[in-house]
Length: 528
Image (cartoon, one colour):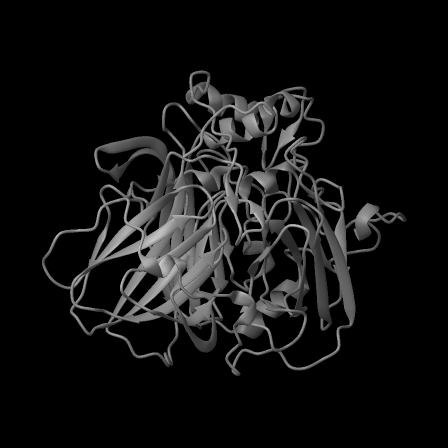
């Protein structure tokens, strides 16, 4: 796995002029008055629905209020055991990685209190859920950050079954151990299976040889800091405090060079991670899932990584894809899946007789994560195993067809929003339309509209784009699979459509956590 300090570091060492995402010290009031159009189509004129406004409350009331599921979590500093004798100091929900799974039934109300025992402010975003806007967990946009020693009560109806997850929306905290699955069960579950295996993929750097995600961002951004600049959802003084606790002066370079993938259109990623994990375990000491030969197993696969796409296959098995990003599709069979950061797939497999490797190849990075499916005794596969299915038939998101129960109705778009993805490694200036994130700049939509969004990737890098609070149909028509996160390949375009049926202020951003922090985030705002 290449980990050299590249010669282009000298180029990256040029001044970081706009890498901060426009840190937001206080929650937006939802307003925004002025007369100018911002570059790239964003607007700051007019009045927008507030995250705590009457429109948001009315939409929540319409979802109903089912039985309440109460949960308490604590974000804290801890030591995590990654297996194989590897332990790291990190931040997590409790003392486990991933954090404890939260499981509810569609129609219930989730009532979760997050206590912040971290040295920085934090937050919690519910990735993929169409929830009320003031519970979406974006500091400076939908809520105030949760201060160290404070807590926040997230309470909202959970309308849609599926595989989701939660993580902070504060700086690069997601690239520590702060993530966990959220499984929303279907009270009328149509699938028949014997067992369920939740599989969370991750790329890991925190606490290894002094590395932290903040130090990685600093290196990628050219090593420039201070000067009152802001990074993400915390201030530079907080970054400096973090680095004082986790000094990075002796940590190795984590900048990746030479990572290439045809599936991703070229450059595979920015960060050379020392470990790749399945359910918090290194490949040399993998998690083992036990079943009986012939069992029908539902795998819920989540990519919680910061900078890595994973190509996933189960040796000796075919995969039947049933859902993507929580929403059902017409069943499609294949050998392998490709998941960008934030994407999820549900698959069914019929367990064979033996011991089988579940391999998550870090696409283009010459490394892999591993777990094991075991139905009888026998030697476990080694960490270097690469089943032939990895090079077999890939199930492609763009070819999936939505289940009729969730397909959008045929309708001409009322509004088209075009966003050009811009930036590059030379200045690490990732953005939409050349403008780094500013929460006051909103791209307007109106409630009730069918909205078409065209993402035009003008960069040499792939980007997994995520829309908060909605799912969209791929391909710009009602026949596309319903998703909330989708890969846009370099120098290609992706068209999606969604119904504007959830009022508020909603983020659209690259789910590469470092690209987002450099500025590739924007806001879709419902007009008030």
